[in-house]
Length: 157
Image: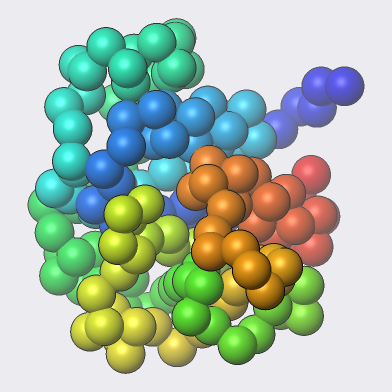
């Protein structure tokens, strides 16, 4: 089923992504669901990486992605906006949180999450509940879960 979605205020932000295939899959998800994507550099790969290109296909349009040179620039540009950090270290589930259509939902590096100083900066920290013996979901799957829920809640879906 297709919808006539246009880009709206909802944003997905990736902190220093380091797996090209995951970033490419997230670009496709954001493109298909109408969310804006923001990438906090440095990335752990080059955008001409063949693994990235294989997954992103023709969904990659650099003009549609906002790049920040570092986390300082990112947080400076967001000082009057709500940022939600998705982390396995959170105590609150995304299912009990009320998303807003202008939220920026931040995901950490696949290999290391975000540094402790970012945990301290961000007011809202959420998790996706999982079985106790599991460590984490793939970031592309996590983005899809959270983006679908936030779009549903804000009636942008």
